[in-house]
Amino acid sequence: MATCLVTGGAGFLGSHLCDELLHRGHRVICVDNLETGSLANIEHIRNGQFVHVNVDIIEPYFVEESIDFVYHLASPASPIDYLRLPLHTLKVGSYGTHHTLGLAKRHRARFLLASTSEVYGDPQEHPQRETYWGHVNPIGPRGVYDEAKRYAEALTMAYHRQQGVDTGIVRIFNSYGPRMRPHDGRAIPTFLRQALQDRPITVFGDGSQTRSFCYVEDEIRGLIALAESGYHNPVNIGNPDEFTLLELATTVIDVTGSRSEIVFEALPVDDPQVRQPDISLARQILGWEPTVSLREGLRRTLEEAGAEKLIGAGE
Ligand code: NAD
Image (cartoon, rainbow, N blue to C red; front, side, top):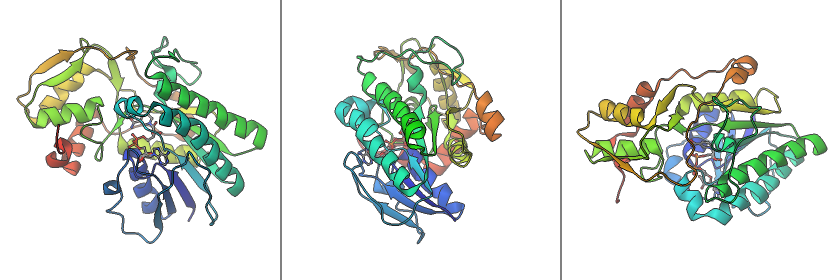
């Protein structure tokens, strides 16, 4: 049994990670100030090896017991959150990552940074390999998130090279599944919520921009494999099946049996045109690849979360 500290453990991905680590017999310390997460995501956990600590990681924090793994997921993640919390997002990526790396160093723990495909920006390389340096607008509204993550990657490599901390970096591509917030503004929860109410599905631009969607179970399996691998350079973990937003909308309509029509809205600033991971490296070093198709993942999300949770309260 290992002791794993998960920052952001009450969030969407973090809570699934806590579940899976506990399922594998590990002890889990969830550090989360509930800024964008919720106790509702962890209230089902009935396991004596689980503890939640309400701490804001922007301030230095300490843990008494010994720790083997640190999974650093805390950060606003959806555009709605980081546009509302621009300075907080930059502080979590900088101070928060600094404090969490310091903690990993003190405990001689293996550290895994949850980075993002957004470090590639609006990519000029397709699909995106880990060697691609990205095409990011640092001063646009999304810059606070993209640059916070790029800084966090630089900080992680500096702690590794200069301080000898055992670090890894996972570049997470769009993930989905139960516990997404219905109003977090991302495509899948929005489309599901609209489709389940037979309301118009709002596609940005002409819907020709592409995304690749990874079911949460696959994503979490990849994160743990990377944490346990001892690999130091960034690794893409995402599903390489690529869909246009229009294809996603029609698939959601199909899976939910909805009568919704599709309407088009203005494209947000700096919205990437394409997004598709090259996962050759993950296949090679981790033997990892996703197994859940988009259709299957949407069906499972619907089944496990239930329509009521996916619709949520209020508009
Ligand atoms: P989320 O918003 O559901 O979870 C983030 C969690 O971090 C929340 O529970 C929040 O309360 C916590 N948090 C934020 N600031 C904090 C602070 N200062 N101190 C302590 N806790 C704090 O988001 P998510 O979708 O689960 O994303 C988790 C991580 O994965 C993020 O780092 C995100 O950048 C990364 N990621 C997610 C996706 C995705 O598709 N979901 C894609 C790429 C990268």
